[in-house]
Length: 304
Image 1 (cartoon, rainbow, N blue to C red):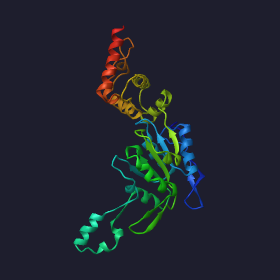
Image 2: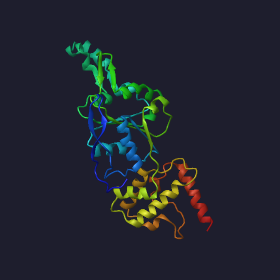
Image 3: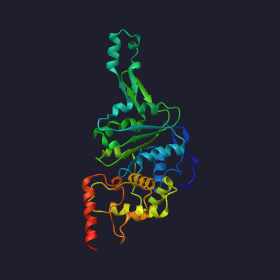
Image 4: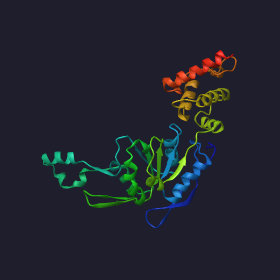
């Protein structure tokens, strides 16, 4: 994830739903997203195999932002489907608004004669009918019911679905680049996993995290960044944390430190020992973790 990497070049990597081959960009990095070599390989491998890219990783590691940056870098429109616990697979295809049709029929509206007036296209239908290849983000698929991934197997595999109300088969004009994110809240079905190319985003090490910070805050002072990163990784290494602070929370914390002009010396005690850093509420998000960290600090102070 080096911000100096150039925009991608175009190569032949993926065919559309017919037997014809179309030119598809390869992702070679972005100025706004620090992508490791293995992550870039995963994106391009999924495109070559014409399979969805399943991205897992800790919350806050930039999975959603990845899809946005890849789409921008490749010049592809991005359609997003953010999954909730109540989301059903059918909603991604289409929904039949039977209530509106019943109401209009009672009012004598002429449009009730054409059932197509009451078919609401879902994000998959919009993806399939696009005149150009698009990127489809299915975000946090593990939030939905366990049957949700299975209900999408045929549509994602064959790039088509049937509309029973209008008796028509909807086929994708171009095979989209599909990115699916998961926070590992629940296991996904094996049949679904077989149809995906999988990549796990490892939590960035200190050097990579420094490059990420440079992308977002190029004007941050070196001493402040070094002190903040040291405190951040010490907190993450604390055993027993219910929720470890993520990359996005580090960036929020640094933004606050810069806005409040907090000096680097405030990150540590006078003798260099660990203290509760300023604005720690940006990093520790529940009382259990805060109390755990407070006990650690107290133990360090009493062991002087």
